[in-house]
Length: 184
Image 1 (tube, one colour):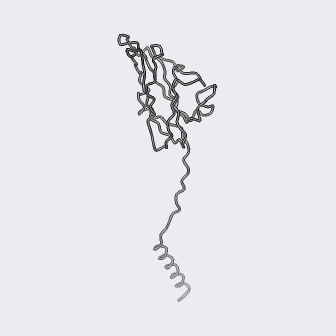
Image 2 (tube, rainbow, N blue to C red):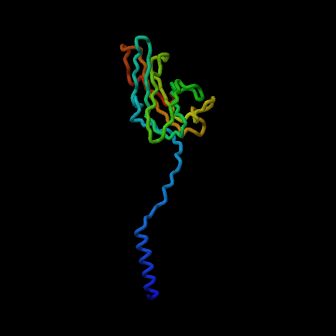
């Protein structure tokens, strides 16, 4: 057998053995998940933030509202906090209501429900409710400028509602009653 024939035979044998063998790709490299900011899905939020909420006082003088925020985030074991401020709140001041919610993963969107926000002590007329959603560690817990720590603003979401509290059914309600500036 000549050299050329021997090369062809080795080449053919190598080709046949490679075709019969199984090719195994390297396993994919998975990265550890990274914490994400919370994303509030506005179209699944109730009541819808673009609507003016009309709250008629009950006969006992009470007025309350329940807010539901549909949120998606990778929490890496850290709870989400929702802080609701009334009429703009005071930076670094206490929120009107604050609630913590169990952590979840990004593929587990969930509803954060704040039940019965009691507005009974508020004057009749228009008010602004602002819900700020962030991981608990990103909130500013000391008096300073801002509700979340400086530099952490991009790690939070906020949603605003306009609420018109009326003293009874005999009080006319006008959409003009709730025209508010961005400062409120």
